[in-house]
Length: 73
Image (cartoon, rainbow, N blue to C red; front, side, top):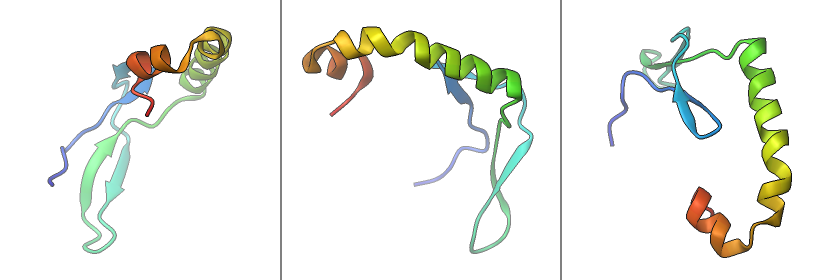
């Protein structure tokens, strides 16, 4: 399995790449393996708000619906 050179972050099931400020290093070689976004305080607040908003509807879903919607096993 090979890694991509860049990965997005996900908020509300949508990929976002506001930056690629965080370098992920290979623990064996010490080389940069990939670059990923470093979430700002605003992005973190938006992700939390989105999660809070989704909590009640998700709790009301039956297991089969949640499985189809979100890939929950």
